[in-house]
Image 1: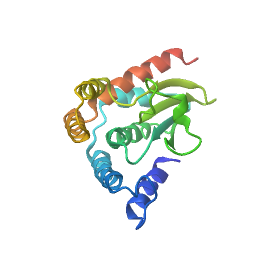
Image 2: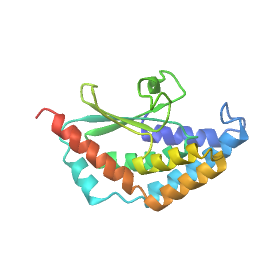
Image 3: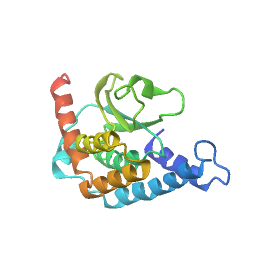
Length: 191
């Protein structure tokens, strides 16, 4: 699905009087509602820096950016809006959003240390060949996550500290890492 379809799916979940699993669980539903707000905030206020803008505008061959995500994913609420805004800078980039928990279960090919962690970005060339994979979160945020996990932090503390990290970072780490990914892709792409 494209980004517009993803937003519609998100809205449909939130407007459904009897949402299907996992959204029938009040915790999932409320977290999804919070993620909608986060995502909308980044769509309105997220700033794309000049370096990533220039790099994306310099892409001269079609690319497909496959994003594996889910509306309940807190990390995705902070990352997917930036990926959408960045991809929109060049009409040669198309976005294909795949849900992690729905067939064809593409995530099984892109596990992170054996886990189905999302979001994942797969950059493919015009022939459908993978050129790069990124995710599930910026490296600095992953360090924080790993530390919290090692400390056996509960879910509430983990989500609060990750939220604070994303709020302070404002998409800067994602853009810096994506810039490196795109630079590497450009070097291996035949002219």
